[in-house]
Image 1 (spheres, one colour):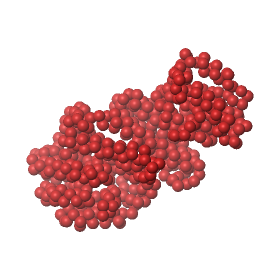
Image 2: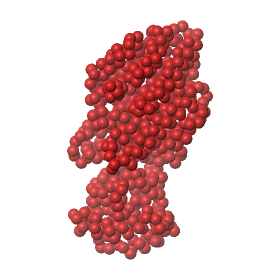
Image 3: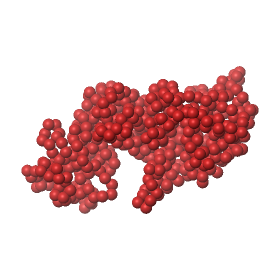
Image 4: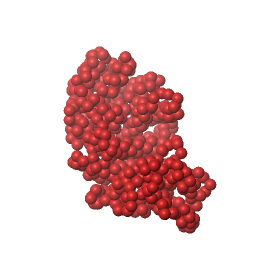
Amino acid sequence: MKLIIREYLASLRERDELDALLPDLLSQMGLDVFSKPGVGGRQYGVDIAAYGSIDGGPETVYLFSVKAGDLSRVDWNGGSVQALRPSLDDILDTYIPNHLPTQFKDKPIEICLSFGGSIKEVVRQDVTSYEKRYTTDKISFSEWNGEKIAMYIEQYLLREELLPKKCRQLLRKSLALLDEPDSSYNQFKGLVTLLSTNNSEKSEDTLTAIRQLYICLWILYAWCREEDNLESAYLASELTLLHAWDIGKPFFGKKKKLDKAILETISAIQVLHIQISNHYIELKIFPHTGKLYALSSAVNPSSSVDVNIKLFDLIGRLALSGLWTYWYLDKFPENEENSNITDTLKQSIVKYQSSIKQLIINNPMLFTPYRDDQAIDIYLVAFFLAVDKKNHQDLYAWLSNMIDRIHFLFQVDGSYPCNLQKYHELIEHPKNDIKNYREDVTVGSILYPTIAVFSGVLGFDDIYSRIQGIKTDFLEHCNFQAWYPDSASEERFYKNTSMHGATLSDVCINQDQDSFLDELFGECDESTSFNDLSAMKMQHWPIIFLACRHYRLPIPLHFLYELRKNDE
């Protein structure tokens, strides 16, 4: 296990990775972390500062200067302000005399040279000489290399009683199976389930479990990044965030230090999920959306089913990442101080929307959903595009073409949308020689009501009429449905432990648009459980989309209800 952690540490970057891990580790070791990495202002060589006792030693001020990977001659003193020696000089000359908090002035100080790898032999003598020269009765030096940090992680974050033997085995198996992402994810899923089975009401136990989820996800991501195969890390990051949210939510809003640390660690997992998602999309998706059939052929399909399933999955991921960006944008007030951040986020949103539109145009398979539950991905895309009216015409063209092709597929008994889930059944779909086959595989639908609601909200009257035609001509037997959270949803939503929610059945499409919307949105007024979800109370609404995408649950119509009210 230590070898795995050491390799993981060696792969971490300095900013927002290694320096984000160390404060959690130090807190778990019992130290008071009084300074964390910041962006913008000068830190005078100190990335992290903490006070306390390690392994029973005297209470000491620990000042960390963090560098990534191995410490080479260039990293030590290569003429850059980012080199380690200038940072140590800043600590000795400026931070300790002028910026160390008053209460620590008379305490012993240990300057910690921190890096994920090891010191190269060519620079070992230089480092040792520097340490000897500046060591005094009050100031000492220590090296926190990958070996030492790995030992502390294993001792304090992954120790046996906190990370059982079974969890260690699952982590090893997940890493060993990276070339088989589904198998790797299933092993990691077992690990997440074990760690998040937290029946303790103590914030200490919950914080430990969430920190372990965080470090295990980081290890998986580091290995996936090294292998250039991010699929397992992407799926695992979704699951980890949902489980961490579930076990941490009882402590939200409390003011104790540990309770705040729980929310901070969940936020760190959220940031890591978004980082993994953005890395995946930047590396695997963005370069190919503008090329005809590029992503379709990249699936390396054995049948059209492979292409269809993967493309709808990809476009759902793109839209979800865009929604996270939109959520972040909403956190920054429009003013001059935030202008650089908001401009960057707006540019990112435009890039996601443009990429989605290019992906649809260059991969016509996205006009023909094979599975009814691909309504989830369609909802994600349509909602993300709908937030900007500039995209409404493109959204209309996509949904219009989709409905036309579905109508045609029903006419010719082609691969029309169905309720089948198993791959081998989708390969064989449709079976036109079996009596009542169509009725059996289209017994219910969330797809057509979803498109119909978007059409009604956005004023796509003719699309709504064509859905009515499909219902009349081919799907008289089909139960059009909508899903709403219920009183059990908050308890079961984030882990998907069992069935929850309520279904509005037999939604009547053969009525005018306003009556149709009033029927569905009237249930939103009655279904108050949606606003009782912790993700809504904490204003982290993308987590609802994330849970629905990951567990293949219908997305509540409440988001569209708000969109309709805003348009009015």
